[in-house]
Length: 384
Ligand SMILES: [Fe+2]
Image 1 (tube, helix red, strand yellow):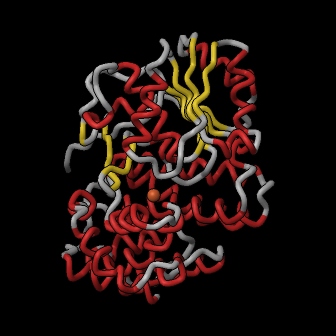
Image 2 (cartoon, helix red, strand yellow):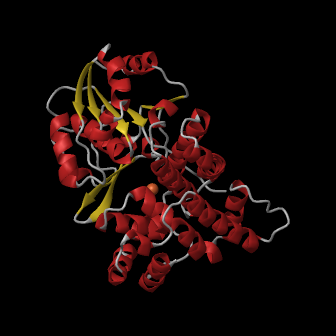
Image 3 (tube, rainbow, N blue to C red):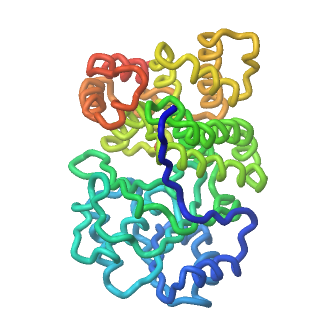
């Protein structure tokens, strides 16, 4: 028996979260001046207003709505200077993973006025605890609301700022914030959540508690994703998918993700393919690659995916899990081959080379993955 540590956000408020609850949470955190981080699309779909109106009733509010997807270090520095412009004592992030990550950075820079964002890169580099932050996810996928990471692109690579200070003081989850997501985004982000959960189980960093979060997340995504995609107004399915995404974040925020995300980040840093789509695409291939080293874990995953494995050997159950994930991607009409996403075949050696350098992710991968394995893997992912 080992000794394990798990870091988690402080407070989760979820369900039918109304306006009065949003204001009350800001007051509970002692806020008087809030810096809101979001993007243009969240404003356009009307979700931002649902958050800002009740906040304005209790605190002063300033809005930064220019977060781009897959933000660079330069973009993060720009948000940092806006966050330092006044004495904010609350940061509210309203959006998808990129927005929530930038909210974490904003909360950190306010408490560390002399540290540039670049000094935060790596593990435990934020000197002073961040100002309180309230994170409101508008997608059900990244799990960013629940992780101690903020990701930025620097020198063409996705790099992590890992710190317990990045964990949320409050997470607010309500299906009313995710209900406007179109079916395609619901599908891709939901399968990103699935990839976090499955990779967290397979990770060598897994422990019994992260397994509990991840296995439940797998079950909830499998049970609800098709319904949430087909009937976006089914708020019960939406809420369950959001809980699954958060549980996935709690799992991989501690156990780490593995080779699938090494590949997805490599693809995302070079091509304008959403993180959700690329990590969903890599998932069955990464399960297949790891099967020789992780049959028992894949059998457990198969059970959570709804397969009856009672009379199956682990290797047969593992192949059922892979087939089920492939089947889900096809049912949800998500891309399953890199060739279909406009990635040229000539780019594969470079992509494989970049993936093989993602040592942090690969160190947790249950099956050793060298450059030549990465080349084969990218060829498989390209041709299907
Ligand atoms: Fe992901």
